[in-house]
Image 1 (tube, rainbow, N blue to C red):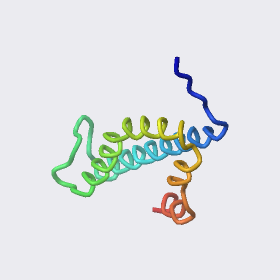
Image 2 (image 1 turned 90 degrees about the vertical axis):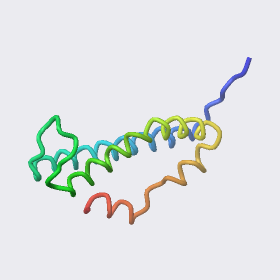
Image 3 (image 1 turned 45 degrees about the vertical axis):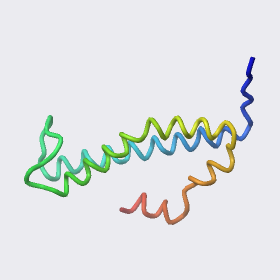
Length: 102
């Protein structure tokens, strides 16, 4: 029988998963604000009149398309290399400035 030992540093992986969820929610909020700004009503996914809205929508949709695969890879890589993998995706100060002000 194979056993999987979870290292104490696996908490960093969980924290990184939480931050990725925050990013997905942020993108969704941006799409909601763009819907109001450009007056794109539900159930329309895209706008013929406002191509900039399509950029917001497509960015969020692209993130959602790869998110399940990212979660699986994050968990499996984090089981073996929790510190090195999460330090690769650790947000820098420049990321935080861009995230909160743009």
